[in-house]
Length: 141
Image 1 (tube, rainbow, N blue to C red):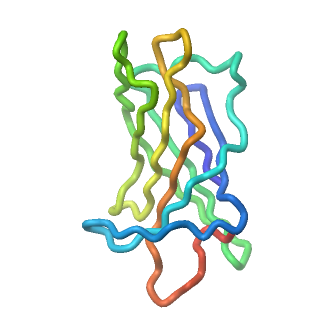
Image 2: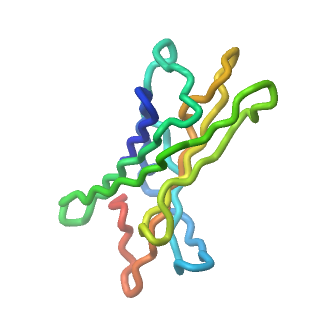
């Protein structure tokens, strides 16, 4: 489960049951298993306010293990630095964490229709190192 928060807005995502992810090689961090997450719930549309251009974004990732003991990790982006004005792109991607954190969250933000701002979108990817010598899925799915 991944909970993304930005200001007063939040969205929850999960790994689709049975998804084994895709193994990708990184330039400096070795092999990572990348999952496209499924959107579960979020701030209701009537309560979602445009995010401030410099809003802090965080992702709390809960990993379930075979022993049923959850492991929780948090990655944060201190300032999202969204653009504003007439030429804002429809979608913007932000990365939280990195290979040094052993956790990468890529979050898609969508421009709000009729507003000069963004909301947390429905596309999120999460990646974690592939553990050598183990075929176990660290996400417990």
